Length: 355
Image 1 (cartoon, rainbow, N blue to C red):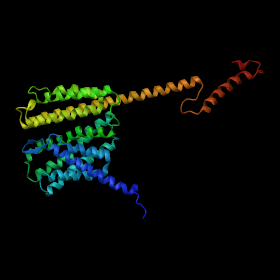
Image 2 (cartoon, rainbow, N blue to C red):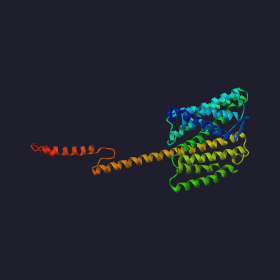
Image 3 (spheres, rainbow, N blue to C red):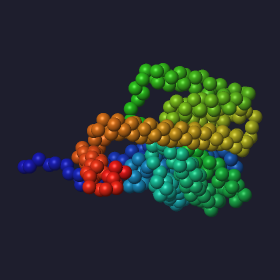
């Protein structure tokens, strides 16, 4: 019996199935983490940050549109861990799947790149992937609550806003982190970079809890950390710092301590989401601008170096890099021929050959 050799046609369905399963498990795990911290607005329970939306959008950007069943499967796992299977669950599954798929399609439409190395990529993720696409899930989810008489009609907009912001925060904070972890090529090559990264981590671990748990409002102290992380470590540093700060602020808000003490639930939601949103925007857009400028500078330096090499070869009479030697010889021969034509015509009585 001949040995069975796996062909690309046989491997492709297996790889796709593994990717779908990975997205489903990641969605479910992120959902369970998100449900650990909840707020109540108008009698409806929601999470200030819904990480599964970030996992879903990142999974689509990394694996492609074919992994969308993993989003539906993971969403079903999360819903079934909370309640029984009912007709309204189908609507939630549709909304939870349609929003990330819509985000993926819009991002690919505008030429989004997963490395987030351009300012336009950061703006696209904010305004298309987070703020626009997540309108679908919040509208469908809250609309089903109203239609099934689980939510009063006058509470629609407040609950809708909380739902929408929570989904958008998941995309703004979680998606960039997952994209960075997927696209990072190698760790720091210099020991000084590791020392600086360790120093930034230690300072963050000391300063962020102080800012989020202090009864005095000190949340502004995290912004110098974000700027430092963005300047020195670009997207990887700034988004990891933003993720840690967002988690600590969410824990403090749900516990009602620190700057969130003695606030109503609505006030807590507004203050927390405003802080998380501005922090995520600052980290994402600042790091994108810095990365774009550094890439532009490297391109200019590379072009200048290539120009210097070409001029050195031309001055030495050699062929520039990437140009055949006979082209230079032809140019030199042409110059010699042109010079000879000006002196060979000795019969010209007016001396045109000397002009």
